[in-house]
Length: 374
RNA sequence: CCUGGGGUAGCCAAGUGGCCUAAGGCAGGGGUCUGUAAAACCCCCAUUCGCAGGUCCGAAUCCUGCCCCCAGGACCA
Image 1 (cartoon, helix red, strand yellow):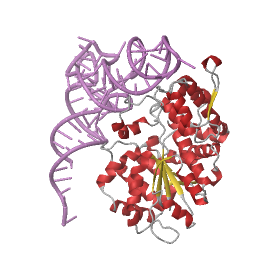
Image 2 (image 1 turned 60 degrees about the horizontal axis):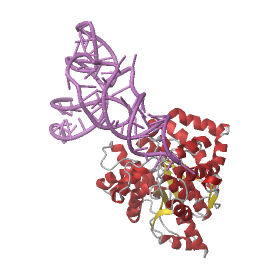
Image 3 (image 1 turned 60 degrees about the vertical axis):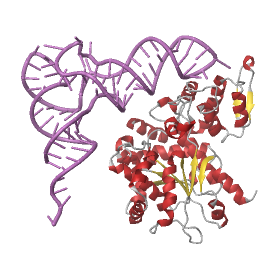
Image 4 (image 1 turned 120 degrees about the vertical axis):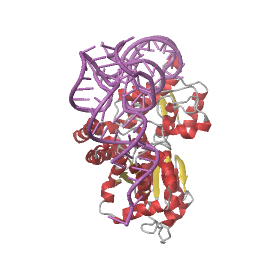
């Protein structure tokens, strides 16, 4: 495998979708420094979707030699009425709990937290004419209709009536990408609308266009990771494939359903309890426990999944690949309870360093600052 | 600024002077039952009705003022 092929593989692996994958090899070959970003709202406790799904991709990108940036979107958090819309508190949590929590998560996954850049929205926008000019340019190159349809990126449903400020959110997110000079934009599958606008307007921007090593204007590559299923039963079961797209957002982990999500600093007992209560039908589709096994365990743990069972239940088993696990489960040869115990234990082990980090006084204090706000 | 409609739990929503210490549904929590969960069944979940006064024996329900939301309209030298 050539070096370029190896790096492309690292950049794109495990992604549910990559828009503009064809453009990657050329960028790599011309020695263009690759800059990544993912924007995160400061919305509350860090769950596995952010802590592990986002950060495992960051780790992969670092391994591919990409400069990674976490954009702490304090303005977007404010626009979206999160954390009570308290700007001062949002900033404080962003630079404290959020930043340190993400670094701890990345470290636990084998990435390099010291080489991870953090940019706060307020800092990027302050005294930055280019940013506001680019925002206007983005707006001039899209339509109100399109922006209204894209508010699903902020967890709002299409057609929902929102105050006008919220319509600034999507074009600001688009402008962020160009202002940060990013050529790889990462997001969950729920962010694709914003990234499609990014790519649509990329060639029309004059103030702050993105260019390659030769000075040609290019579009950022968009990489989208899988959204982890929430642990609760989907609102509609069985899931109708026709309605999958609209249901997807409702199926993801949500903070309003406390036990549908596991947080990065949950205690082993909490993790076991939540997973024990998880929806886990005999089917393999839309099975959150299998979903977590696939995307969290097999993508991070070389050892695969170790299942402990009593002798009368068949004794211990190891699965080296997800396919092996899925097929065994589908055949009814692995009991859901045993699967749950194994997945829980594996996550507990994976998150051990994160919990350790949160036991230290500085992070403990930052965490408690957040809890007071919730 | 005007006209009309509206503000009841996380969400939807009934109730228009006393039986409201506020119905119902969804979501959520606890439990029973299953070697998981789900389903089923049982239980919990607003001392309070946008805010402040007032009338009345008694107000979520009537009156006054204020705040906010929605749909129009007016203004636009």
